Image 1 (cartoon, rainbow, N blue to C red):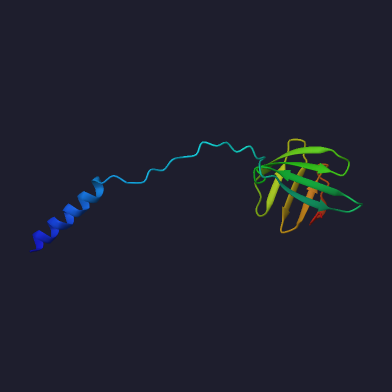
Image 2 (cartoon, rainbow, N blue to C red):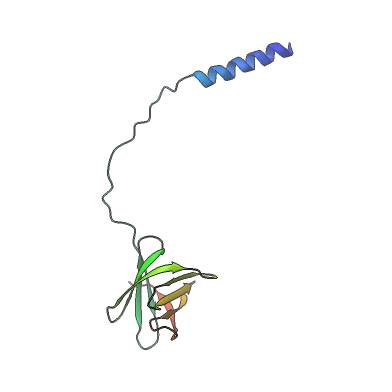
Amino acid sequence: MKYLLGAILLGLALTGCTSTPQNEVVQDKTTNNTPANIQVIYFTGPMDLTLELKSSDNFETAELVDNSGKVHHLKQTIAASGVRLANDQGVSIHFKAGDGVVELVPGKPISITEFKKQ
């Protein structure tokens, strides 16, 4: 009896493995021409400092634009916590939970706070 039950189960398993699916999946060949998802964070600091940080790759790279219109291209670097981006000219920004520090001139940190632009 035990062998008969084992043979039936084995037969069912093999039958299930060799059956072909009835439904075919057809992939639609459309192209997506929408622009990349761009994230923008705005910061403010002392003496009317305003900064705009834009990224299209989840802040692996970003553009930091100050209120004078100067653009700094930054890359993500190692941070103990939060997000830190920097470039070879010494410009950096490090932020977490709405607060941060920016260095537009190496060695001169400026405290900044995130704000929501309307």
